[in-house]
Amino acid sequence: MYDDSPDGLLALANSIAGLVGAPVTIEDDASELITYSPGQEYSDDARVATILSRRVPDRYRPLLRNDRLDVRLAGSSVPLYADFRASGAPDVLPRAIMPIRVDDLSVGSIWAIVPTAPSREQRAALEEAAALAAPVLARQIARRRGEEARRAAAVRALLGGGPGAVEAAAALPLAPGPLAVVALRPVVAAPSGEPLRRALAGLDGLAGPTQNTIHAEADGAGYAVLPVRDERRLARVVRELQDRSGLVAGVGRTVPGPDALDRSRADADLVVRLLTRLGGAGGAAAHIRDVHLDALLMQTVDLADESGHDPLGAIAELERYDRERGTELLDSLARYLAAGEDARLAARQLHIHPNTLRYRLRRAHEIAGLDLTDPAAKFEIQLRLRLRALRLP
Image 1: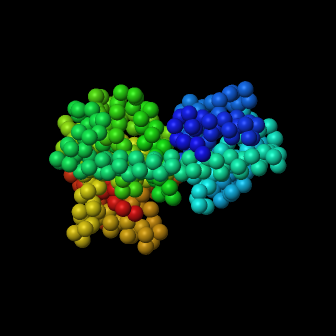
Image 2: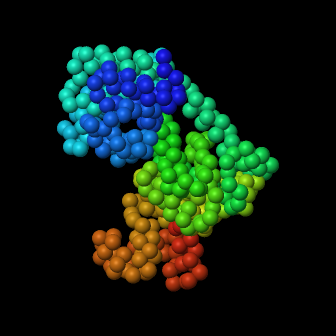
Image 3: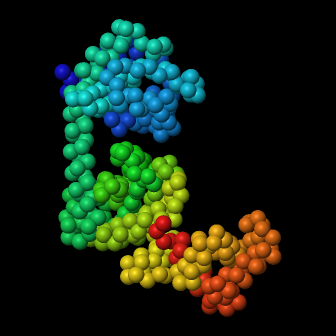
């Protein structure tokens, strides 16, 4: 039996390395490093980077998808062998990988650097090692989930604002002063919360050791409460996080203290909803101040739809005409306005002759009464086109 102290985990790693005859790392089900055996005499950058960052770095994670390795690991109870050099990663040495299971549930894995496919003795040693590691990882995961649940409850209290947030802030290591909420949501819902967990953990590193972020998953999204010393720097940090994670990220307004964090949370959620509605498979990031007008317009669209009104007016009429007859009058009108009313430029973008474009604009006027010669009418057309872009599909 091994305890969960650093010495106990090190002893476990050393025992497994001795059994297998190779340097090993042990990871939990979220690819966080639990422990590793000392010695780098037969190693590579992937192992070193994992040890230094205490988790498998993002740049190595795509290797798990090679030959469906992640799927095979999740369903296996015997050692697997992966030669990553044959999969386009010449600098990553081959590994023997042993899933660690508790009650048929995968809770982690042992990764041993081996020069060739493991021998029968090594395979037996790995299976014995997994049995040694299973109770340790089960306790680690139970402790982690308990901490996550407590942290999520505290973060929910913070996000609610008011006296409850003030009380929660006093019990947390949250620095006094201006605060803001960052909301993160996957572009496509993932079967596990791992992308959110990794992104929130990455936010700690990007924000810096003195920022003291408080974060957790709640209601299918990831939320972080951060002290704000420089709004522009915070926006840059969140954009960098989004670039790495591919999630949708929104930053709420800066508020003077925890009692007003519900306002910042509402802003952050609104930004995420707006960016999600505008689309983009790779995600996006924004601060509420940079998209506030679009957010207000989106809310206007939603209110109009809820009350049974159509905020698009004549644009909706033209949209129906195009749909029924297979024409492209509305797209042509939008391209023309987006090109600054330069008919030649818009025609090139549409791959049509300028005269064809002018004909389509006349037809738009005839069918829906869209008058581009009146400045007020033209502004209304542009506004309704923007409302159309912000409407739910």
